[in-house]
Structures are given as structure tokens and as C-alpha cells.
Length: 375
Image (cartoon, rainbow, N blue to C red; front, side, top):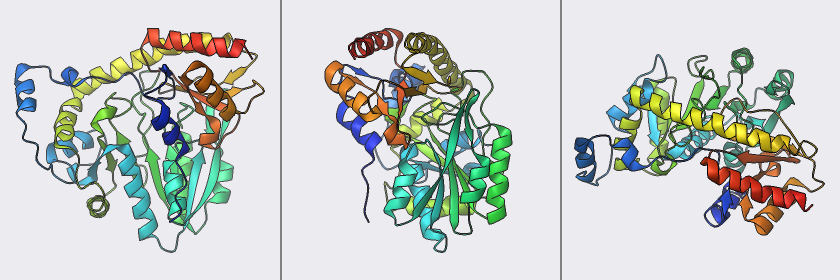
């Protein structure tokens, strides 16, 4: 197996804890454990927890808590994982292993490149379908998608809301994707880790339940601001699929952390999750106004489509540098970390994350301005 470096994760892992300002993060300012423990009783329960193994596919209370956000599903449809990254890995591995006559993966770009990299490492072929930059967002090229999906396609993989653009794939486009998938009998995998972090109150449409060969992956990392729990899941169309994926997880991390499983149950209570989502949306809206004002002050250098969800913006840069060169110089000269478009297979763009607290964000932009003004 020839495993290509996962460049986005590597640059973040190497530098995010060492730079003065990290704008490469795609989530919002994380919560603390104490924020989840609202009562003395909950604090006592947490501190007295025995640190044994948890239920390997997630406890029943956890899977029930997750399932409530996917109408028509139950605990039997859910596999709990160590972060959304494990859910993505297991689904990709399962698709490759269970479909020996289908060795092609259709992958929408720009995107979070994990599943694409895994598929290539297994020896499969990745065919891309591009999102097109337009005034109302980054739009799927449905006609191009029709051309790249074949009888050898195992799955179409999308990210909605999209990373790195923050755009939402609308209902009509999801319907078109399903129709194309159904015609060839291929799976649809939808990474929905940013669903719930929309600028507006209305949630983006989920792919779950639209097609009987759909798997949705997600986690608590982005919307719920709990990346340190490393708690994710795959929502499956049937108990059979969830059980098959469970077989694969027995060969990876065995089970989620018992502490994470327990804390996730509390975070996913409808009334509590609503509070978390409200906090996330408020932070995104307020910080976007700061980010937009700063971007607009460099209108000669930056072109962008405002994100509809998440604390990220994908920006076409016209500095005369390659995006990777811009990122590395900004890192070394000003100790500010952002992500280059090359790591999303879209050169010429940069991704800026604006989910930090206000003062931190403003100071980071001041440092970024010093760099741009000196070019």
C-alpha cells in the first residue's frame, strides 16, 4: 500500500501548536469539560467514572442520542467512532473491500481529502467532479458528475456543508446526485460534520434518508466545538450496514473512549445541543463580519464567495505567489498559519478559518496585513 502524505493534516500537526496565530482550524473556539457538567451530580458522576472499555460500537444511550438527528433511524443504524476521521476511514475501507468489481471513487473537489487519499492507498482510482465558484456559492457540476460515474464506481463522496468553501449543496442538487447514483447502483457518502453551523437559522439539507445506499458521517468536532472528545459516527441506512462497519472498527480502535461516550450523550441532548449550536452560529456570524471587512480591504488581492456555513472561507488570492508559497512565507515570516488551496486540489486559493475568539482573530489579521503590505 502506497500511502500519500495527508498534507493538510501534516502541516496543521507540525505547526498549529507552535505558531502565534492559527487560522488553519475549521472549527470554532472549543468548549471545556466544565461547560458540559452543569450540575454537581454530573461532576461527581464524571469524576467517579471507572475507566474501563466502553461498548465497542458506542453505548445504546449514545447511539440513541445520535439517531434522533436522523429521522427514521434508531440506535441500530449508528456506529460510534473515534472522531469523524475514523468514520470516514471505516466507510472507505468497507466500500473498497465489499465492492471488488467497483474500483472507482467519485470525489467532489474542493474537499477534505481524507477519503480520496485512503481510496488511492488501497489501489483504487479517484475520479473528481468539481464544485464551481459562483456568486451564490460553490455549485456542483451535475453534468460533469453524470460523465464520471460509471458501472465501475463504488461511491460518490460529498461534503455538505462543504470544506473548504463553507457552501451548502442545496436540495435540488442532492436530488440530482441521488438520481445519478441510483442509475448506476452506487453508494453516496455525505460528510456532514458542519451541518448545524449555518449562518442562517435553517439547517442545511441532509443526504440521510434520500436514498437507500447513503451513509452520513459526522462528529462533535465542528458544530459542537468538542474536537478533543474525538467522538464521531456513521449513520447507516440499515442495521446490516452498521453491523458490517462495526466489524471493521474491531480492527482499528476497538471502541470510543468511555469518557467521550458519556460526555457526548450529555452534549447531544436536544436542549443542550441547541445551546451549543446557537453559540457556534453567533460566533460564526460575528467573526465573519470581521473577516469580511478585512478581506474587502484587500479587494485587489482577494476574491471570495461568502460562506453559508462553518467558520471557513475559501479565497482566490492574486498576490503573485503560489498559494503554497504564500502559506509558507506567512508561516515563517509572521507566525500565522492558514491552509493552501493545493491541499484541496485547487491551486490559487487559500482557506482561512475564523472561528477563534474575536481579539485573537483581529490580532491575526493585523499580522497577516503586515505580510501583505510588505509584498
